[in-house]
Length: 276
Image 1 (cartoon, rainbow, N blue to C red):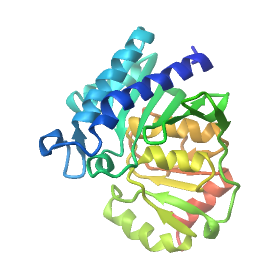
Image 2: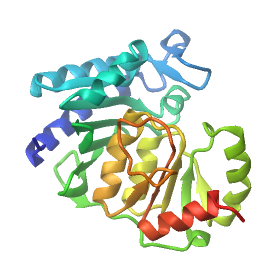
Image 3: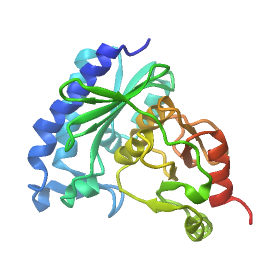
């Protein structure tokens, strides 16, 4: 099975609808009771996350009745869903509000992410920007593009390869174990610049459209990365885990580095993690 361009545009409309109906009306209007913690103080969920996930899940189930639907908030309530996803022939993975901490704080940097995974391989990805009202779409083997609400589109392309000293990267080190932090943090000065949006949706969009070169993540939940890795690859980029293995939404640990090409990836790994 593949996702056609027409189906991809339809899914993008589903995400836009959820953003306009459930997310934007709640932005900067959340009460204290609308924000809760999950696994820890930095792991937030809001009424917008839950309402948007329900709306997206229902719309996808109606369009793809044979597919499993896995939402981040549903998985938080029932962790066994992750195991079921690994066995599903077709699964849609939903991150209803990526960047929830930003959203809850009133920072306009959040997105909606969905990935279609067939037998463990991502075949399509969507990153919708509610504030900009456009969607990055990637289809395996067919490229990646930004599509505006009026249908206008332009192709995505990663930045040209650069040596690490000229790379700008989004480095998410918060979930690294202490020994890895101790190695990586002093080495960030070897890059040209670093950033952290607290929002994988916008970080993946940034590298897929050539605005930065490098992404580094330690925690790999599929709703945060399945769509972005596919879009980055279709924009010409190269990704691999810290051990060199290809990314898989079935694998939830082991870190990830995304770069413009395989050589840039190797150089970034040596710069940030290698022996001096």
